[in-house]
Image (cartoon, rainbow, N blue to C red):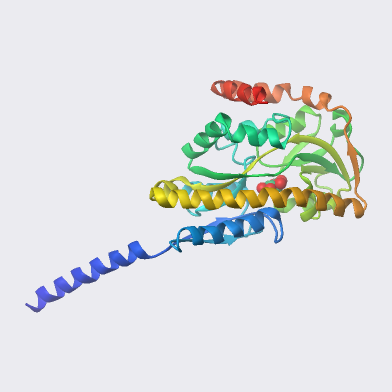
Length: 327
Ligand code: BDP
C-alpha cells in the first residue's frame, strides 16, 4: 500500500514537472562582436526586448556583446551546433560554411548597398537563406554593414600596385585571401579582436573595413589612411540555430521573425547615421581619406577569385548571374 502510494506520488510529481517544463520560458543566449553604442549592439538589444514582448515572455534573450563569448568563426559554430541560439553574424565568415552565402563575398558583386538589399529581398536572398539553413543557421533578418575599404598606416591606395607587398588583415575566408593575393599583397586572416594590436606593432600593414568598425575599434589611430575602394559590400544576419527555430510553433516563429525584422529597421537607420558620424570623427582626428577615381583595375584583378569560386561551385553560377542581372 505504502509502496503503491509512493509510486503514484512519484507519478504526480513527474507529471507536474513536465507541465512546469512546458510552461517555463525559453532562455536564449546571443552573440555580438560589437561595442556598446554600435548600431548592431543597440539593434540586438532591441531584438531581445521585442522578442520578450511579442512572445509574452515565453522566449527571452540574453545578449553577450563585444565578442565576450568568443571569436566570430567559433560563435558561428556554436550557433550551428546549438551551444548558442542566436548570433549577429557577418556573412563573410559564414561563407566557408555555406557556399551559397559566400556569393556575397565576391569582391564588387554588389553595385551598392541598395542593390545588395534588393538581391536579399528577392530570389537571391531565398537561395542564400536556404543554403545557410541547410548548414544549421536560419537568417531571420538582414543588417547593413556598408562597404569595406582598405586602410593602412603609410600611404593612400589608388591602384592595385599600392597594395602590392602589403600585409593586409582579412576575415577568415579564402575569397578574401585570394582577393589580396590578386592585388599583389600578402593576406593575413585574423580574428577581429587582434587587429588593433597587429596594426600597432606592424604585424600587418593594413586591413579593410567599413567606417563604423574602422572608427569603433580605434584602428584609425594606428592606420591613418582610408582609401575608398569599397571592394566588399557584405550583409549581416540575425541568425538562429535551425533546430531551435524549426521546433517553434508557427505563432512563435512569426513572433521571432517579426522581432528580428523590426530590429533590422532600427539597425539600418542607425547604420546610416553612424557611417556619417564615424567618418566625421576619424577625419577630425586627422585620417586622410581618398576616393579612388578608377576602380576598374581592382575589379579586373578579381577574375581569378570569381573563377575559383565558380569552379568549386559550378551550380552557383546562376546565383552569381542572377545578382549581376538584378537592377
Ligand atoms: C565588421 C563586422 C564584424 C566583423 C568585422 C571584422 O561587423 O562582424 O567581425 O568587421 O572585420 O564590419 O572581423
